[in-house]
Length: 65
Image (cartoon, rainbow, N blue to C red; front, side, top):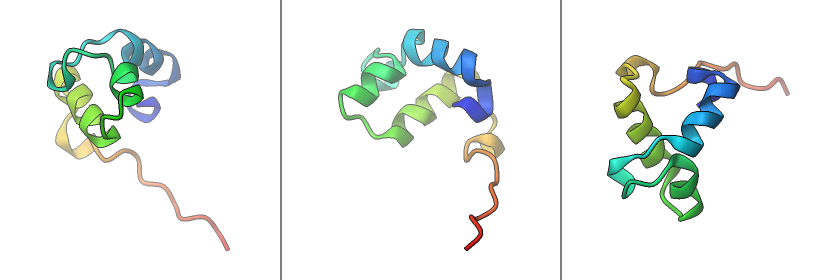
């Protein structure tokens, strides 16, 4: 969520946005209840209109060995 919304706003969303697909819980509550992170993330994306091409997050280079 930090990559998409920034660290501050992602914390606000995680603790206050009610997600209907996960029983009306917030992202934080859903994760604490054992809901799969991908399910929670996709629910946030749907409510916040995150386009499909940004739902996988930023590309990151693999760590150097």
